Image (cartoon, rainbow, N blue to C red; front, side, top):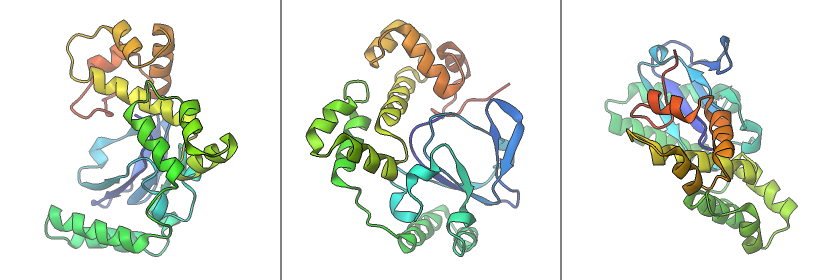
Length: 238
Protein backbone atom coordinates (compact mmCIF):
# COMPACT_ATOMS: atom_id res chain seq x y z
CA UNK A 1 0.00 0.00 0.00
CA UNK A 2 1.23 3.53 -0.67
CA UNK A 3 3.24 5.40 1.94
CA UNK A 4 4.98 8.08 -0.12
CA UNK A 5 8.38 6.41 0.20
CA UNK A 6 10.54 5.22 -2.72
CA UNK A 7 12.17 1.78 -2.54
CA UNK A 8 14.88 -0.26 -4.19
CA UNK A 9 14.58 -4.05 -4.08
CA UNK A 10 17.22 -6.56 -5.15
CA UNK A 11 16.17 -10.15 -5.74
CA UNK A 12 19.09 -12.27 -4.53
CA UNK A 13 17.67 -15.28 -6.35
CA UNK A 14 17.88 -15.52 -10.13
CA UNK A 15 14.20 -14.88 -10.81
CA UNK A 16 13.18 -11.50 -12.22
CA UNK A 17 11.08 -9.21 -10.04
CA UNK A 18 7.50 -9.01 -11.26
CA UNK A 19 4.89 -6.43 -10.22
CA UNK A 20 1.19 -6.99 -10.89
CA UNK A 21 -1.60 -4.53 -11.56
CA UNK A 22 -3.81 -4.42 -8.46
CA UNK A 23 -6.92 -4.06 -10.67
CA UNK A 24 -6.01 -6.82 -13.13
CA UNK A 25 -3.71 -9.58 -11.91
CA UNK A 26 -3.39 -10.89 -15.46
CA UNK A 27 -1.27 -7.82 -16.19
CA UNK A 28 2.27 -7.61 -14.87
CA UNK A 29 5.67 -6.13 -15.67
CA UNK A 30 9.12 -7.63 -15.16
CA UNK A 31 12.06 -5.54 -13.92
CA UNK A 32 15.04 -7.86 -13.92
CA UNK A 33 16.68 -8.64 -10.60
CA UNK A 34 16.63 -5.11 -9.17
CA UNK A 35 13.78 -2.63 -9.23
CA UNK A 36 13.25 0.93 -8.05
CA UNK A 37 9.69 1.95 -7.24
CA UNK A 38 8.78 5.58 -6.81
CA UNK A 39 6.37 7.07 -4.28
CA UNK A 40 2.81 6.00 -4.93
CA UNK A 41 -0.79 6.93 -4.38
CA UNK A 42 -2.06 3.44 -5.19
CA UNK A 43 -1.35 -0.14 -4.20
CA UNK A 44 0.30 -2.85 -6.27
CA UNK A 45 0.71 -6.60 -6.01
CA UNK A 46 3.82 -8.77 -5.72
CA UNK A 47 4.20 -12.55 -5.70
CA UNK A 48 5.87 -13.24 -2.37
CA UNK A 49 6.84 -16.75 -3.52
CA UNK A 50 9.15 -15.19 -6.11
CA UNK A 51 10.88 -13.06 -3.47
CA UNK A 52 12.24 -15.63 -1.03
CA UNK A 53 15.53 -13.77 -0.58
CA UNK A 54 15.63 -10.06 -1.20
CA UNK A 55 17.51 -7.00 0.00
CA UNK A 56 15.54 -3.78 0.12
CA UNK A 57 16.28 -0.11 0.67
CA UNK A 58 13.30 1.94 1.79
CA UNK A 59 13.94 5.67 1.69
CA UNK A 60 12.26 8.33 3.75
CA UNK A 61 10.01 10.56 1.64
CA UNK A 62 12.36 12.46 -0.64
CA UNK A 63 15.26 10.32 0.52
CA UNK A 64 16.04 8.88 -2.91
CA UNK A 65 16.40 12.31 -4.51
CA UNK A 66 20.22 12.61 -4.08
CA UNK A 67 20.90 9.26 -5.74
CA UNK A 68 19.19 9.64 -9.12
CA UNK A 69 19.59 12.18 -11.89
CA UNK A 70 15.93 11.66 -12.70
CA UNK A 71 13.65 13.94 -10.62
CA UNK A 72 11.66 11.93 -8.10
CA UNK A 73 8.48 13.31 -9.68
CA UNK A 74 9.20 11.16 -12.75
CA UNK A 75 9.08 8.04 -10.56
CA UNK A 76 5.59 8.79 -9.23
CA UNK A 77 3.42 5.65 -9.35
CA UNK A 78 6.00 3.93 -11.53
CA UNK A 79 8.66 1.23 -11.28
CA UNK A 80 11.84 0.85 -13.32
CA UNK A 81 14.56 -1.72 -13.65
CA UNK A 82 17.37 -0.28 -11.55
CA UNK A 83 19.75 -0.84 -14.47
CA UNK A 84 17.74 1.70 -16.49
CA UNK A 85 18.56 4.43 -13.96
CA UNK A 86 22.00 3.19 -12.90
CA UNK A 87 23.13 1.62 -16.21
CA UNK A 88 26.65 0.64 -15.20
CA UNK A 89 26.28 0.16 -11.46
CA UNK A 90 23.10 -1.75 -10.64
CA UNK A 91 24.44 -5.24 -11.38
CA UNK A 92 27.71 -4.55 -9.55
CA UNK A 93 25.71 -3.43 -6.52
CA UNK A 94 23.74 -6.70 -6.54
CA UNK A 95 26.87 -8.81 -7.01
CA UNK A 96 28.50 -7.20 -3.98
CA UNK A 97 25.40 -7.95 -1.91
CA UNK A 98 25.60 -11.59 -2.99
CA UNK A 99 29.28 -11.75 -2.02
CA UNK A 100 28.65 -10.35 1.46
CA UNK A 101 29.21 -12.87 4.24
CA UNK A 102 26.55 -11.52 6.61
CA UNK A 103 23.53 -9.23 6.77
CA UNK A 104 25.65 -6.64 8.57
CA UNK A 105 28.10 -6.67 5.68
CA UNK A 106 25.20 -6.26 3.23
CA UNK A 107 24.18 -3.07 5.01
CA UNK A 108 27.77 -1.80 4.84
CA UNK A 109 27.87 -2.57 1.11
CA UNK A 110 24.59 -0.75 0.55
CA UNK A 111 25.74 2.33 2.45
CA UNK A 112 29.01 2.51 0.53
CA UNK A 113 27.37 1.99 -2.87
CA UNK A 114 24.71 4.61 -2.20
CA UNK A 115 27.29 7.19 -1.17
CA UNK A 116 29.21 6.50 -4.38
CA UNK A 117 25.99 6.95 -6.34
CA UNK A 118 25.19 10.43 -4.99
CA UNK A 119 24.66 12.95 -7.79
CA UNK A 120 22.93 15.71 -5.79
CA UNK A 121 23.37 17.22 -2.33
CA UNK A 122 22.06 15.06 0.51
CA UNK A 123 19.96 17.87 1.96
CA UNK A 124 16.58 18.66 0.46
CA UNK A 125 15.60 22.27 -0.12
CA UNK A 126 14.88 23.79 3.31
CA UNK A 127 11.24 24.47 2.47
CA UNK A 128 10.76 20.88 1.28
CA UNK A 129 12.49 19.44 4.34
CA UNK A 130 10.32 21.57 6.65
CA UNK A 131 7.11 20.66 4.84
CA UNK A 132 7.96 16.95 4.79
CA UNK A 133 8.58 17.00 8.53
CA UNK A 134 5.30 18.80 9.24
CA UNK A 135 3.24 16.62 6.91
CA UNK A 136 4.67 13.41 8.38
CA UNK A 137 4.30 14.58 11.96
CA UNK A 138 0.66 15.70 11.79
CA UNK A 139 -0.91 14.90 8.40
CA UNK A 140 -4.37 15.07 9.99
CA UNK A 141 -3.85 18.59 11.31
CA UNK A 142 -1.34 20.38 9.06
CA UNK A 143 -2.60 21.77 5.75
CA UNK A 144 -0.61 22.67 2.67
CA UNK A 145 -1.78 26.27 3.11
CA UNK A 146 -0.50 26.51 6.68
CA UNK A 147 2.93 25.21 5.65
CA UNK A 148 3.04 27.47 2.62
CA UNK A 149 2.62 30.47 4.89
CA UNK A 150 5.82 29.55 6.73
CA UNK A 151 8.27 28.68 3.95
CA UNK A 152 8.56 32.01 2.15
CA UNK A 153 7.93 30.67 -1.35
CA UNK A 154 5.18 31.24 -3.85
CA UNK A 155 2.60 28.47 -4.07
CA UNK A 156 3.76 27.53 -7.55
CA UNK A 157 7.44 27.37 -6.61
CA UNK A 158 6.77 25.38 -3.44
CA UNK A 159 4.64 22.79 -5.24
CA UNK A 160 7.25 22.52 -8.00
CA UNK A 161 10.13 21.93 -5.56
CA UNK A 162 8.24 19.56 -3.31
CA UNK A 163 6.99 17.44 -6.21
CA UNK A 164 10.42 17.30 -7.83
CA UNK A 165 12.18 16.16 -4.66
CA UNK A 166 9.55 14.09 -2.82
CA UNK A 167 7.80 12.73 -5.91
CA UNK A 168 4.21 13.58 -5.00
CA UNK A 169 2.44 16.92 -5.00
CA UNK A 170 2.02 18.28 -1.44
CA UNK A 171 -1.72 17.64 -1.27
CA UNK A 172 -1.39 14.06 -2.53
CA UNK A 173 1.46 13.43 -0.11
CA UNK A 174 -0.63 14.68 2.82
CA UNK A 175 -3.49 12.38 1.85
CA UNK A 176 -1.15 9.37 1.68
CA UNK A 177 0.40 10.19 5.05
CA UNK A 178 -3.04 10.61 6.61
CA UNK A 179 -3.92 7.16 5.24
CA UNK A 180 -0.75 5.81 6.84
CA UNK A 181 -1.71 7.39 10.16
CA UNK A 182 -5.03 5.56 9.89
CA UNK A 183 -3.29 2.21 9.33
CA UNK A 184 -1.04 2.83 12.34
CA UNK A 185 -4.10 3.68 14.45
CA UNK A 186 -6.03 0.49 13.67
CA UNK A 187 -3.19 -1.98 13.10
CA UNK A 188 -3.49 -5.12 15.22
CA UNK A 189 -6.58 -3.86 17.06
CA UNK A 190 -9.30 -6.47 17.42
CA UNK A 191 -12.08 -3.91 17.82
CA UNK A 192 -12.26 -0.60 15.96
CA UNK A 193 -14.71 2.29 16.15
CA UNK A 194 -14.37 3.45 12.54
CA UNK A 195 -16.29 6.68 13.10
CA UNK A 196 -13.91 7.65 15.88
CA UNK A 197 -10.90 6.69 13.76
CA UNK A 198 -12.16 8.74 10.81
CA UNK A 199 -12.61 11.87 12.91
CA UNK A 200 -9.38 11.51 14.90
CA UNK A 201 -7.38 11.05 11.66
CA UNK A 202 -8.74 14.26 10.16
CA UNK A 203 -11.47 13.09 7.77
CA UNK A 204 -14.59 15.21 7.31
CA UNK A 205 -16.94 12.28 7.79
CA UNK A 206 -17.10 8.52 7.40
CA UNK A 207 -17.91 8.69 3.68
CA UNK A 208 -14.77 10.77 3.05
CA UNK A 209 -12.74 8.31 5.13
CA UNK A 210 -14.01 5.20 3.30
CA UNK A 211 -13.47 6.85 -0.11
CA UNK A 212 -9.81 7.63 0.65
CA UNK A 213 -9.17 4.24 2.25
CA UNK A 214 -10.51 2.37 -0.79
CA UNK A 215 -8.66 4.64 -3.21
CA UNK A 216 -5.30 3.97 -1.57
CA UNK A 217 -5.70 0.33 -0.58
CA UNK A 218 -8.35 -1.14 -2.86
CA UNK A 219 -10.06 -2.42 0.30
CA UNK A 220 -12.72 -1.20 2.67
CA UNK A 221 -11.52 -0.53 6.23
CA UNK A 222 -13.27 -3.68 7.45
CA UNK A 223 -11.65 -5.80 4.74
CA UNK A 224 -8.23 -4.46 5.73
CA UNK A 225 -8.87 -5.29 9.39
CA UNK A 226 -9.66 -8.91 8.51
CA UNK A 227 -6.61 -9.34 6.26
CA UNK A 228 -4.06 -7.30 8.25
CA UNK A 229 -0.68 -8.93 8.83
CA UNK A 230 2.32 -8.06 10.97
CA UNK A 231 3.51 -5.82 8.13
CA UNK A 232 1.50 -2.62 8.12
CA UNK A 233 1.31 -2.13 4.35
CA UNK A 234 1.10 -5.75 3.17
CA UNK A 235 -2.03 -7.88 3.05
CA UNK A 236 -2.69 -11.18 1.27
CA UNK A 237 -5.12 -11.23 -1.60
CA UNK A 238 -7.52 -14.10 -2.38
